[in-house]
Amino acid sequence: MSRFKAHSVLPGFNLALGFTLTYLSLIVLIPLSALFFKTATLGWGGFWEVATGERVLASLRVTFVTSFVAAVANAFFGLVVAWVLVRYTFPGKRIVDALVDLPFALPTAVAGIVLATLYAPNGWLGQYFAAHDIKVAYTPLGIVVALTFIGLPFVVRTVQPVLADVEAEVEEAAASLGAGRWDVFRRVIFPAVYPALLTGFALAFARAIGEYGSVIFIAGNMPYISEIAPLLIVAKLEQYDYAGATAIAVLMLLISFALLLGINGLQWWSSRRGVR
Amino acid sequence: MVEFKKGGTLMATQTQRRISTHESKSVTLLLIGVALGYLMLFLGLPLVAVFVEAFKKGWGLYWAALQEPDAWSAIELTLIVTAIAVPANLVFGVAAAWAIAKFEFKGKSLLITLIDLPFAVSPVVSGLIYVLLFGAQGWFGPWLQAHDIKLIFAVPGIVLATIFVTFPFIARELIPLMQAQGKEEEEAAVSLGASGWQTFWRVTLPNIKWGLLYGVILCNARAMGEFGAVSVVSGHIRGMTNTMPLHVEILYNEYNFVAAFAVASLLALLALATLLVKSLVEWQAKRSGEPLHHGA
Image (cartoon, rainbow over all chains, first blue to last red):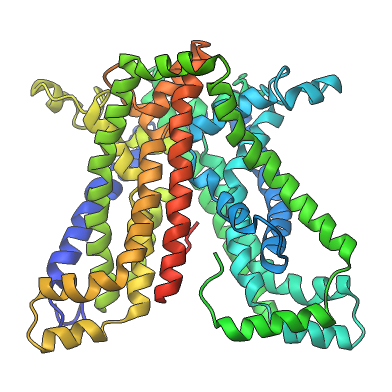
């Protein structure tokens, strides 16, 4: 024990850690490992066959493209929202600030049916799009709308504290040296909040990839066009194709991890450049 | 949301900034307009629409929809599932935070990463893993069938899936909080003769109460609202294994929009209550100087 753990006068280590590890194993680790064991029963050939199936590839493309577009939209508008909430005062600001977390609190199924209703061709918003021959609900565009809703708080909440910490003195120094407001933003403020922006983007993106509840109502769920990968997993499960469903799940996990690793790497690289 | 900071100096520098560096009035108004427009479009309008759709055909139909026996059993099941999942994850969160924050041991950062793992998994996959374990074709499927135990397409599966998706909420709130607070106060209590439990109840708990409450609120909202994971393991048996979000789906797919939005309006009220209590807790925590960890 002594080599594994540093000495402490406090009691309860064995009980607390023992319970933590048991609970973690039973609820998370053992069930998740089932995913990989089940995929292994397919063998490499079988896995490859599922992974390169046309419908699977199409659903992965829909999932990742719509998630990316939604995360980009949230990166831009989230930065504006964070900026406005940190820098300006206006009536009702506290309520607006609290409302930003709505997507975390509102069940996804509720978000799904209400967005589908709003953006349906006869809906409050959908009718204006329909007048210009644009279909939002039941197309990939509808998926982007749902994923934008789901990912909205991430960028705001990661950028907000960092933006509040930007030293006013640095901005003043830049301004007194003749930099315009836009230059100050571009050269001083943006580099400071950039890592947080990237983190928020990555979180929104990762959340969007796995999202199911809010999307299925508005997506239309047409195979090859507006069918997301999580829905294809459910479809395979309903046909009792457990191995196929599992293979898609593993594929999704691997791609998400690779992307997150890439984004983390990018962040590490950009923060090192910032230090120099 | 702004993490707790040196109030006085912040105010002073803010007024200075106004003088020397500030956007022009038109840019300010434009940015506020864009931000509020975006939030109205994506948050305000959907929230209003839930209630408008629910009351579209009047109060009578709204009440009738909520008095359906199936709606009641969905509400009941949601409450039961939440009443198991939240306390389970609360005990886990406290135990994990105690071990991680108060002791030094090897593999700690790996443990913290593993605790966050359920957030990286799609809700659908969170349900799938339990089907693989306990479903008819799963690892334990034949054994469970032989003993006439049903976990999948039954309430225990729903509870398990809910525990999984809400697993990190309380732990990830408490771990950074208790790490920041250190262990001096507990060590002092123990050296003065307090027992472990006395130390926890009288010293640790008062220090972490707002963070704990914060985690519980977020955990509770997700537990009541979870859809994807529960959908996979539920089997959608009306009046038996339907939680509120699943009931919303069924009603909506049957084109019973008023009833769907009536049940949805209850969940929206829950979301609003969550946001309100969350803001109050944040405000209280700020006042008592207990820094909250705002994990997204």
